[in-house]
Image (cartoon, rainbow, N blue to C red; front, top):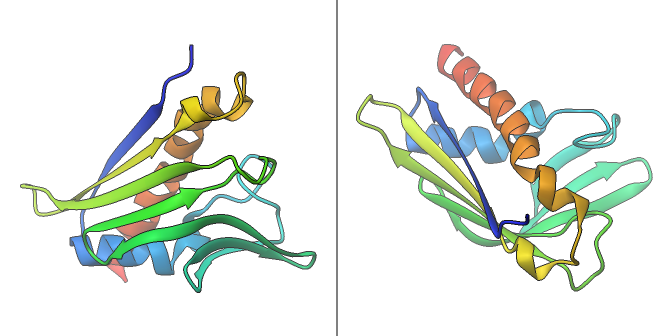
Length: 146
């Protein structure tokens, strides 16, 4: 069964502005290394409206920024590195103040039904983002202490 959308949420104990900064400016710190998430010797960063993975062999575009609203929302047109050029999904990350004084960060990755039937990524994408979000929450917690 393929679902069109995956949602992952975490609560971080920092302001929406700081949560956005950790997500964007410190993305290479929390984006896990290893074959599940990226090449070992690469850097993940936002560069001129794109999310890219840069290594000695060059840059791979992971997505293009569609909306950049610091402290509120980030929307990325997402492209899997092995996908055909016309295949794309959309990732939206929202940063909302929580009544606990922290920020609820919600990621929605949608558009999976538009891809090739049986695309393996669609069956594990929630686990993949969940793993990355655990690392993001840990990095955000460290930012509060710094």
